[in-house]
Length: 164
Image 1 (cartoon, helix red, strand yellow):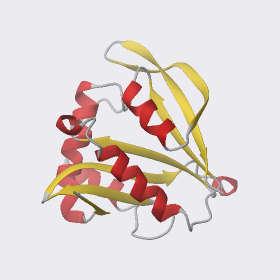
Image 2: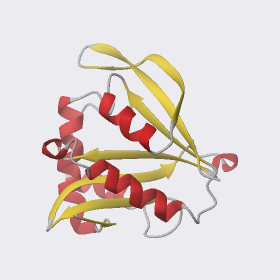
Image 3: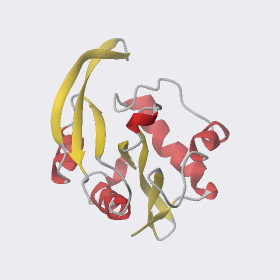
Image 4: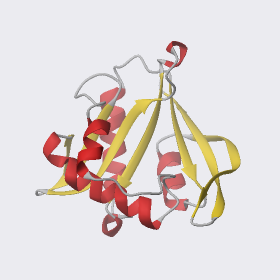
């Protein structure tokens, strides 16, 4: 498996992975699946350099996950903060895909002017919490019942990681 920058050709597969989480889990608060065409707008916000990246885990041509670093908030004073996320093919959970993705992402971001990384994790999600803690994220708080999906309210724990 290699980790590489995503290309426009990857968007359909990335959409499939994300839509699994939209339809079957509380990991994202999107509630309607996306088409690949709709996700092309999302894809256009990432670059191969700088602080906003989209990396994919490619296992001999099979994309088994992706990780992103995105703007944390739009206001200028937040420019040195990012939000990170990782999504893996549901059949590839627990086999190191997320670890490989985050390892490569944080290696690439090490030279960028980024002070903090943040991650919101809808609870419960022990695997995601474990992954983030493995990379030095610490829990800083919980928004209680902040999102409604599948007919119930969900809490979101917020984690942060110091990068510089």
